[in-house]
Length: 403
Image (cartoon, rainbow, N blue to C red; front, side, top):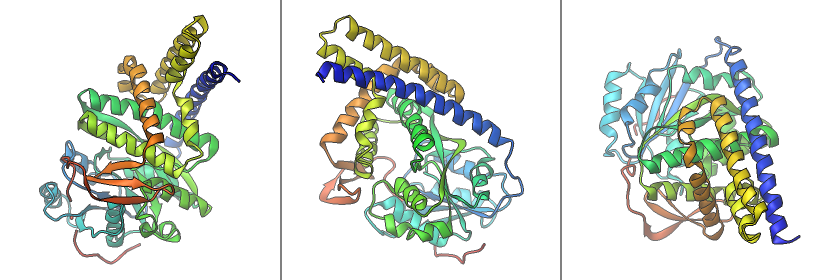
C-alpha cells in the first residue's frame, strides 16, 4: 500500500469515526433525558464529598459554595490541603463559618506517593464519615441537584463507579477557550465512544462516585498513589472487580477563568502522555480523531491534486457538521460559537499527540516527572517547574465513620 493510499484510508476512516461518535453522543443524550425522569428519589444515602485543593482557582469561593448548597438530605464536604497556610485557606475558613455546623471540614494531607492528588484523597477518605464517596476537582462548579443525580446510579448494586463529563465555563482569553473547545469536541466525544461501544473504563476528575467497600476492594488510594492516571486506574480496577463503570448524564462546569498558553500546553501534554503510558494499545487509534491533519498529510503526498484538496474540504465539512450536531445534543452553546476555530484546534491537538509520542516528561503541580511505561510517576530530582497560582494547600484529625 502506497503512503498516499494509506493516508487516504486513514482519512476516510476518521470520517467514519466522527459519524459514529455523533451517533453515540446523540444516543447518550437521549438516554440521559429518559433517565432524568426515572431516578429514585428515595435513594439518598449519606455522602462524603471529597475536594482536594491546592491554591486559588478562578472564582474559587463560588465553585466551593456550589458543593455546599446541595438539595440533598445528608452530606458533608471535606477539603484537603497539603499546606495549612495555602492561599485558599481563608476561602475555606469563610465557608466553614457560613455553612451549617459539621457541613464543611478541612483536612491536612500528608505525602503518600508521587501523585499529590491521590495523597490528598487518601487523607480525605480516611477522615470521611460516610461510605459513599464523591470526589471532584477544585475548579468544578455544580447545580443544587448535583449529588442527587450523580449518586442515583449507585441504586443499582452492580454499579461500581460513576463519573461525569465536564464543560469549560467562565472562560477568559483565547487559550482558555481553545482548551475548552478541545474537551468538548475531541476528548469527551472520544470518551463516550470508548465507554459506550467498547465498554472501556472512563473516569474524570470532574466527578468520581464510589462506595467505600469498592474502593477498599482494590487496595484503596494507596494502591494508585504513584500513578499519573489516578482516575483511569480507579475506574479500571473497579471494573476488573466485576462492577460497572457508569457515565452519568450530568455535565459539570469546569470554571477556567484566564489561562496561559503554557499552562494549556503542559496540561494537554500531561493528559496525552498519561494515555500513552496507561493505554498504549489505544494510543495509535487516537489518530482517527484527527481528520483534518490526516487530510492535509494525504493531500501533501498527493501533490495537492483534486482528490487531495477534496479530502481537506470533506474533513472540514465532516468535523463541522458532526460537532455542530453533538453540541446541539448536549446543549453546548459555547462550542457552536467557537466552531470557526475548530480546524486550528484540531491541528493543535495533533501536535500535542505527536509530542506524546516522542517524550515522557510531564509537569504537574510545580514539579517535573518522568512517566514510566507502566504509568507510574518518577520524580526528577532537582527539577521544578515555575509555580502557578494553583500551587499550594491543608487538614484536621480524622473523625469516626458513620453509615
